[in-house]
Image 1 (tube, rainbow, N blue to C red):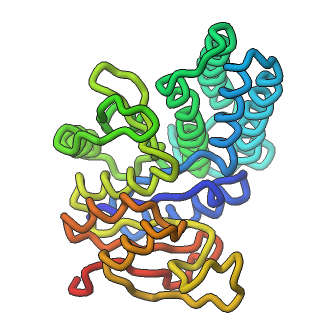
Image 2: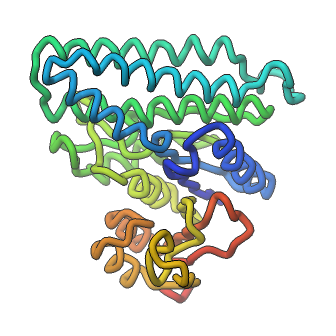
Length: 310
């Protein structure tokens, strides 16, 4: 059985939250399922990347300050996740080296830096270049979280989402080629027991990076779940599930323990931010239940989204 577990930006905002997410993944893995972990960018990073691209396109060198801050934040997360002063016991070839992780992630920083310089020189920002810039949030988070998992002595394989999620060139809100993506996804995960990938991003047939619109990591998780005929898709966020009201605004908001696909889709399209509107459709077609759960209250029951018959 395969379980897809997606963790949103607040769930992976910094090392302490990431460690909570890794705990949840490990508890699930111990039950024997194959696990695919889909992650968003670290909380706030996508906004920072958009600001970086915007400043660069205006010829404003202040973009370099944001660039350095983004690099520093990811470096800090690696240093906290892979604590070599207090290492965890790990089986052979399953650990992670802080030095190696910092060296590898610096290659991504270089790519981002070169792209930002290109935008700065051209003083214009195409939608394709904006997608390329935004993609670094998920590229960076999926790599460093994967290294964090390995530092626990847990074998984990990194998958580049752009290799399996194929789209058209509608940059900013690309449309997924389902047939091609499902085939690539199914082939990619054969024989893998624990994998990690970034949500939100894909690529065109000629390899240009695309994004699936803001909040699209939920959609990625649902696509992967459908491609693999997963037993369940879990969306891990910072609230207990789908609520009757926005719990950040209404203290008396109540948890909805179970809801149909149709009602959840309607709520999402009407602005309920807990789940991306496109998430429901792939799961409906394969009749895969979706659970919305709280990373900071993992024993909570969450909300089950299904047709009510499974």
